[in-house]
Image 1 (cartoon, rainbow, N blue to C red):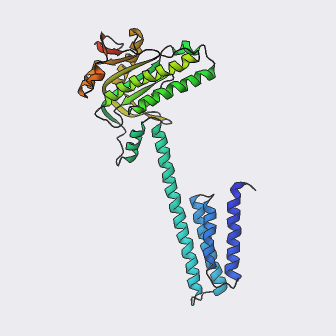
Image 2: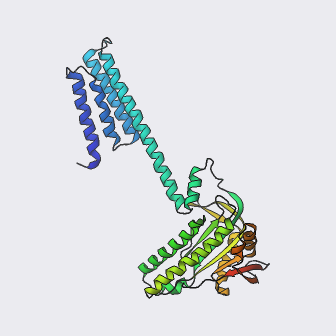
Image 3: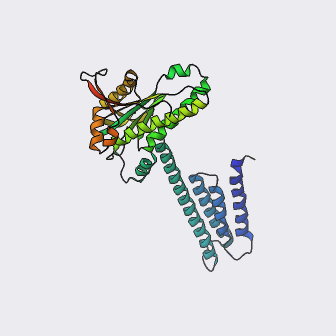
Length: 334
């Protein structure tokens, strides 16, 4: 017998036994209370509607047994015993359904937390789960946008087997994600051999740009330590470029009818992507804009700002005005 049929068959057999005892045995107690076991057995493998049907069936058997034995007479203890059985069935059914509802809410909450944990830091996940009000799906605010990309990905992967490429990407993205989450950032999307992260969404703070810069430094530190391990294994060093820009972004859901995703759009995002690409031309590891530097000073992070070198103004693709850039270089290995 298939496992899915064991509980229903057991419940039906038990219900039949209880009915026979309640109808034909000389026992002077409420045998109908044993129907609660039937409801509990059904609950282990059935849906909410089936539990209600089982409870209704047990109640019907209780009444049928009473009518068969006592007819329409409602005197003495038989009505009391029948009432006890019906009450027990009702209370058990209520508790079973309530327990189901609680478990379903817990599972839903855990699914929500698991989905949020893919993109938000643990602290932000806790804040989002505890928020009394839902965040607006579409809104505009100031944030720091960071792009991270592996330098020379295609040439590097040309020497590797497909399985090794996937393993390397998993290791890379795990290190990038860890650095983002450790600094209260949000992963907007993975970009194959890199990612796009936002600092200040969905909940802004007084240190969003500082967190973004610290995340960039942590990323380069993590890659440097990883390269030390790779060097011991005779593997080629990995380089990543990080670009950060600060400004207004629009946060909302985009996509089609079949698939939507929450993302940020706007010129700030485009500039951040262009700044990351500029790292290769300037041969630097971290590149930020003048607006990032202004925000660092505004947030009181003068020490971080002092670590950057002035790269002058550069004309980025699609922009008519040059953008002031500042760089920070880190070694490939510690």
